[in-house]
Length: 198
Image (cartoon, rainbow, N blue to C red):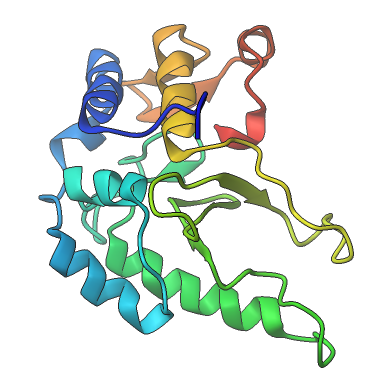
């Protein structure tokens, strides 16, 4: 799809560099990346095939260990979770999304969706395309089940670039002493970055 930023290792390395420049400890706790075969084995029970962007994400690093402290985050709201944890969360979200749904109605969690990270909300990718993974935010507390979801970003690469821009412009910054992130609302607004992505 022309015009979309497609995730690749160079963009992930730019994200890691922006995090490292702020002293974010997560960069020192990343698990080794997964092979295509390992990724396929993990998502096969979900009936999914990962787009190239998702393969770049978990191929670069399989998140941070499950037992990592909460201060080991990627941003104020999100943690880079191993694909195994993401698959488990996807199963749970599918079950919850199908509760109270009348026969013939679609689930509130599409069969092609897969969470990208774990955190304070739902940030998911659509895995239905071979290359690009459009990004959606989901909030079952306010979303109207009768209104179809539309992507907030056209690709996973656009999400990673959004995080890079926010870090490099210090719209989000890491407080090493308190071991937590801060978000600067005015800076995010000036960059056109919705807080829900941070």
